[in-house]
Length: 146
Image (cartoon, rainbow, N blue to C red; front, top):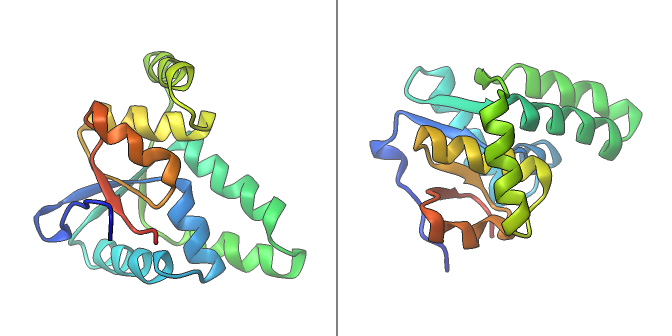
């Protein structure tokens, strides 16, 4: 694997990007298995899963956009069952995300995930290759992608 990742054994909390959740919902590997392990650890009280409300919304609209109608309801229900601590978007986080988006080739929603991960000093769970270059600014990654 060409990417360094944080080890879960020493973690008590991670920040979720929308990317791994959508990969899990679609059953894609290797993210699907990795996310399932994170969810199991959270359900067992061994790990706190956190997410920006911006990325939470990204997952919900992506479900509506990407899943056929007969599968969208079950995908949404599966997502909503995950014990996730949600972080509200405040003015300072918006400014931090805008600054990141203005410099790096990342999506606007990803900028919120990165800004919050940096603010909270938490590893960002992702497999989105656009985010790998942000390790240079101190972003910690828990890589679940190929």
